[in-house]
Image (cartoon, rainbow, N blue to C red; front, side, top):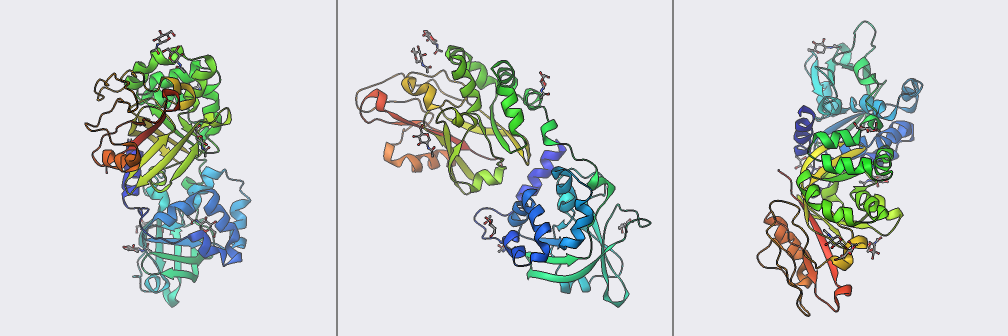
Amino acid sequence: MRLLSITFLFLLASCTPLCQGFNVTKILLKYPEFSTFNHYLSVTHLADEINRRLTITVLAVSNGGMAPLLSRGLSLPTMRHVLSLHCLVDYYGARKLHQLPTESTQASSFFQASGDAPGTSGFVNISMHKAGVVTFSPSDSDPGTFTPATFVKSIFEQPYNISVIQISSILNSPVAEAPAEAPAAVNLTELMSAKGCKTFADLLLSTGDAATTFQNDIEGGLTVFCPIDQAMDAFLPKFKNLTDSGKLNLLLYHAIPVYYSVQMLRSNNGVMNTLATEKRNYNLTVQNNGEVVTIKTPAGVVAKIVGTIKDEDPLALYTIDKVLEPRELFKKNVSSPAPAPAPVVAEAPKKAGKGKKNVPTEAPEPAPGPDQDAADQKAADENRAGMIIKGAGSLAAVTAVMAILVNFMF
Ligand SMILES: *[C@@H]1O[C@H](CO)[C@@H](O)[C@H](O)[C@H]1NC(C)=O
Ligand SMILES: *[C@@H]1O[C@H](CO)[C@@H](O)[C@H](O)[C@H]1NC(C)=O
Ligand SMILES: *[C@@H]1O[C@H](CO)[C@@H](O)[C@H](O)[C@H]1NC(C)=O
Ligand SMILES: *[C@@H]1O[C@H](CO)[C@@H](O)[C@H](O)[C@H]1NC(C)=O
Ligand SMILES: *[C@@H]1O[C@H](CO)[C@@H](O)[C@H](O)[C@H]1NC(C)=O
Ligand SMILES: *[C@@H]1O[C@H](CO)[C@@H](O)[C@H](O)[C@H]1NC(C)=O
Ligand SMILES: *[C@@H]1O[C@H](CO)[C@@H](O)[C@H](O)[C@H]1NC(C)=O
């Protein structure tokens, strides 16, 4: 899929969490005359994208300059397209701008990099005129009707990482302003079905209001971990054993009501609520170290992200190789042999000894409890995952920790 590959290239060019970056929101906060522009950078999540870049130029427009744009009553996704034309993926400080050749220079913008811009739209022409006047216009704008924006002043420069400059007016093009596909218009279950998660999608449609709940949560941000068909099919006997509310909660457990891009998953640590949390205490903990993201739940099997179906704010859909089992539903059965949901899993050893409990694991040597995190990391490094149960006290008191190791192809 073209959009995906572009997104991946885009991610590659982005800042890793280790890179101490800048904060465009903070930079612009010092200048109240750009508060509207700053506000929309935040609500469209472009600010996050900007902060992740190593090299970026932001073309800011004053509150007065924003007024004509606001009066158009654009939806937030469309607003994001328009404003993404104002984020150039190269460094243009005042000095560099005034040293540009007289023929126009084409600069690539976030809009172009988003994959949403067809053809040459998404490029911005920067032209140097006599008397040192620098103008900006979208490459696909009609010179007959579009009045180019002019360079006003430099606001903030940190060569050659971020330059924030003021331009006189909004850059716009019919393509950028074309109504963007509303994310809520995406049919989640159809998308999942088409990408190897048909069983999960069918269960969402046939289980209470699961599909509707997922669908309604997209607008506010949603990250779904969809078990691939092989995993979900293998899990079906266990699923069918659950009560109706158990079934619903198991499905809701696979989604987080927040949008997390791949790089956000990498840079966010901590407990995350799932859609099932509202009903009972179902949660996941995301841990990471560099490129590797680990998601732990208070119970369950081990899963790994094996693909990305969609990753575009506010919706992220990832495929995982196993079904997530919340402790609320499976704690009593945690040491009973689970059917191997993914083909890569070796048959689990079926032992439940006294004191120390043997557990299903893919790793040849189960790590002891206290080394849980190190073990997770080791497993992650070795591109495999192991489930470790701390053998303390009675079976009922066993605390199972599930780790989803998220390994990315790059
Ligand atoms: C600035 O960019 C360089 C590479 O162009 C990068 O190595 C450095 O980490 C960046 N600095 C910041 C603060 O992002
Ligand atoms: C950037 O700065 C703003 C305002 O100070 C703050 O609310 C926000 O959390 C910061 N973002 C990051 C990623 O630190
Ligand atoms: C932008 O530059 C390209 C290439 O130089 C040119 O074909 C195009 O017409 C220019 N667009 C505008 C609006 O000036
Ligand atoms: C999505 O598609 C499925 C089947 O194609 C349909 O049953 C469902 O109602 C659709 N959902 C929405 C929100 O349109
Ligand atoms: C489903 O429940 C039945 C009866 O309680 C039990 O015998 C069977 O092993 C269960 N199957 C699974 C897959 O858990
Ligand atoms: C997460 O769930 C576990 C198990 O139900 C619970 O003990 C813990 O308090 C929860 N954590 C948060 C932050 O909600
Ligand atoms: C646990 O296993 C027993 C039988 O082994 C089954 O009856 C029960 O429904 C299972 N509990 C859950 C939550 O799956």
